[in-house]
Figure 1 (cartoon, rainbow, N blue to C red):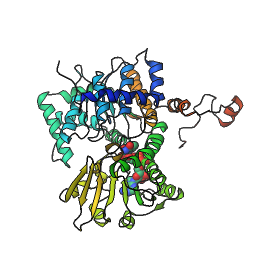
Figure 2: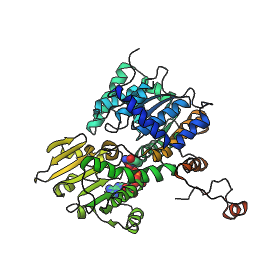
Figure 3: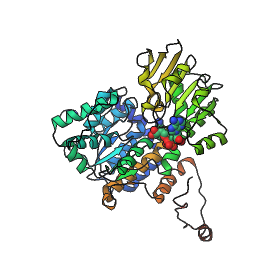
Figure 4: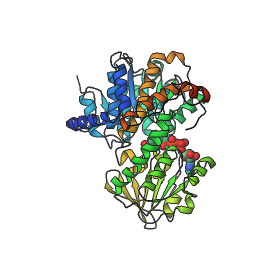
Length: 462
Ligand code: NAI
């Protein structure tokens, strides 16, 4: 049989395996699920398409899904985020994976298509940012005769439309059949979750979706504490710049913004924040950050980081005002937070992979990280294993729920129940030596909970 994977270099598998073994010691949630469900194999029969950064931590997730009985095929959800040794280890272990660090956009969408090609068809999606879901739903709408592959709004959209046309020509009806066979999707990140709620609002969500991002043990940990470690890691690996004493601007003070601002402060930078939401702006101010408008800080700051999940946050007009050798990067999901397209006709000098120096018309130079794609995964290796264990434990629980119980839900977006959120947290306590206190029945009764939990009402915000 022809080889069913695309990786940079399969001989990296041994290195990948060594790092996987280390990561397992830092991912107690996933290892506990292997222990609890490895024998029962609750995912037997599930054919899961994964579209999520192909890192070492993701490799531990994939092997957990396989140990629980699933068949898995995988692509990365970003052209720069793959760790080639992780991909090689997964391919060598027999799971088809299509991911190379630095793949082109055309390859990216081709690889996503390949990850769907189970002989008997896929029946579950594990998504990060919503591209796998988008691919199937857009293709099915095109097959139904809707005019959705018209004039592309961006270079990437053109690539997506071409890939959909290619699949439609090769296998007529494939998108519709695939959509109808999918039992559900679990979504990893804020941006993908926005897309799912939007689909639901428009009546276009054809299966149940589990919003993994808004498990407390995901967004309040990965988005925050994860970025706290991985943002500065990315800037340092890319530039080796001295951060202490520099002025940094963080655009957005949501979960990722809070972690990012803390990351830069921890490195000794003087941090300013921009926000559009008065609540988050007030939080930033009371956390001790100066809250400014970008135009007021743009000429004096040294480092600019977008964390908003919004588009056109750093625009050409801002980049023109920046001082010589300003560093600009994004840690939000998509690259449209910074108007990178508007820089294409300027002079680019590639410094090394995922680091470019761009000369502005006034002669000032700017260092752009990962071409505006999420820099903690493009320039570094993403979040540490321990925090990803919490995220991915939620993912596995979500996949199990969809596979065994999708019929209990309508075509809606749901969040895992709080007792599972608390279970995920509990699984991570021992590894870092936490001794949890216990309620006695009188205390539990007094605050209106049970001794076993859940310990907070749904509206509690942590
Ligand atoms: P969030 O919704 O908690 O925070 C975004 C914040 O940006 C909000 O407070 C919002 O008011 C603010 N904002 C929106 N437009 C703005 C503008 N024009 N100027 C200033 N502020 C603005 O979302 P979260 O969870 O922090 O995620 C942000 C992005 O990061 C998403 O795209 C998400 O998918 C991505 N993400 C990336 C990770 C990584 O490892 N790189 C990890 C987790 C999430």
